[in-house]
Length: 209
Ligand code: PRP
Ligand code: URA
Image (cartoon, rainbow, N blue to C red; front, side):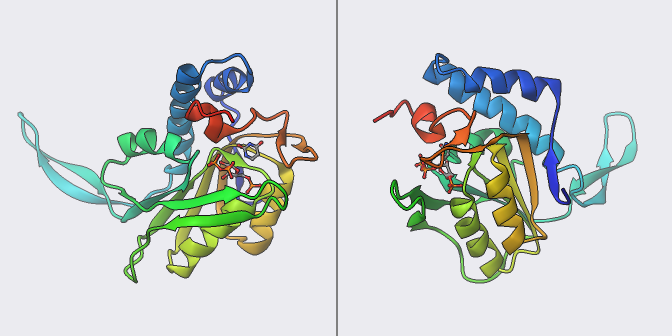
């Protein structure tokens, strides 16, 4: 599917098995989310623009490069927070703009409770971070905020996606590039991804109700 990049890297796949395991403890789950996020980000940033810069090494002057574009990370609270540190580690100059949504348990629709975006002056590239793309409702709400801010290049990074969510996102925002570690079978009656990994936010924050 155009604009969907499923990264079938053996490291990602082996980390995913740990995330899927219901017996994986919270501290390990959180650490592995970070590892997978780093690997996904490596792939999602492969086409960032650079500009040449002069660098003095201890030996001589040479030409290096610096990132040309302003980059914004847009984590969707809560679970997206679990991805931020590892992405910032790779792109330390990135800005971070938070969005808070929770899914209504009956309608599965996202409810916004936090939005921190500036007026105007959009970043050049936004990386929207959320480990789970299920019905796509939360991602769509986040993407609306990012496109309303007039960000020209938008990428969604998720650990696991359901086909339903991918199709929904691309039907509204076909230019969004979606980077995922796995595309699973689908959704169950509670709109959880199957086989999935359960509730990502609860498992990252050790807050299972
Ligand atoms: C989860 C997940 C996504 C959303 C995906 O968050 O982190 O944001 O569900 O589902 P969707 O594609 O059907 O919208 P949740 O609403 O459980 O909030 P949390 O991150 O605070 O746990
Ligand atoms: N949110 C999650 O955390 N997991 C799912 O499977 C679906 C939505």
